[in-house]
Amino acid sequence: DTGVSQNPRHKITKRGQNVTFRCDPISEHNRLYWYRQTLGQGPEFLTYFQNEAQLEKSRLLSDRFSAERPKGSFSTLEIQRTEQGDSAMYLCASSPSRGTPYEQYFGPGTRLTVT
Amino acid sequence: AQSVTQLDSQVPVFEEAPVELRCNYSSSVSVYLFWYVQYPNQGLQLLLKYLSGSTLVKGINGFEAEFNKSQTSFHLRKPSVHISDTAEYFCAVTMDSNYQLIWGAGTKLIIKP
Image 1 (spheres, chains in turn red, brown):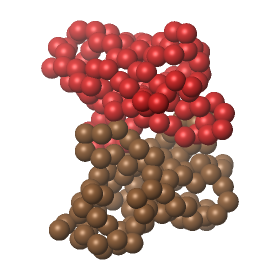
Image 2: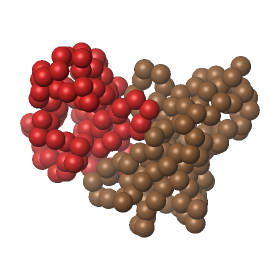
Image 3: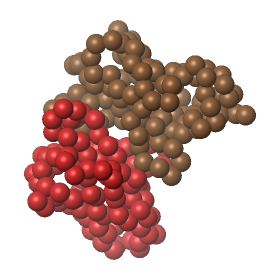
Image 4: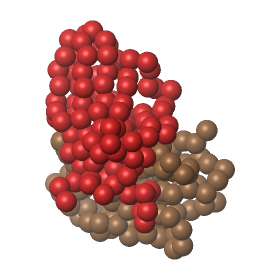
């Protein structure tokens, strides 16, 4: 078990460009979460998947953001027309649906810088 | 709305001294409580959790936390810190079936030699 992985680890983009991040959860975990963390703050919930179904989205997730989890395995988070305010660390976490579903395992994050 | 407050943004402490990092939450329903640690340039790692039962929970690296329902607190403690404990510590709660975590702003633990 290699844990949760995220790619890329760092992304620098110009304002207005689109970016896509990938998260590979722990293989037997059904639940997958995306969070955003800005400097000096705790993470903020963005969205949640159970298998391939996106069950909850935060108000923070504007229409420029979209997340998918095809086939219930890896997930992608896309940001269209990036703005400087999108600069943050994007964190992915996964958890099992049975046993310890409340115990989330986090990836190392993708740091986005919008210039 | 639920919220988590970490009262100190930074806590400096001498090596081998005890430390307490404070966390208070607001909720009208039962919660699960967590402390996560984030070492420099690394992801978040679960330190310990409270689900039910004994209010004193022990975690990794010698940390423990006490759940106090009447004070809605979940303070983290360690009797003797080491330089390797330098990190940012986050308190989080969850209270719904989706297990969405609500986080405090974090406390940076600074160990002075």
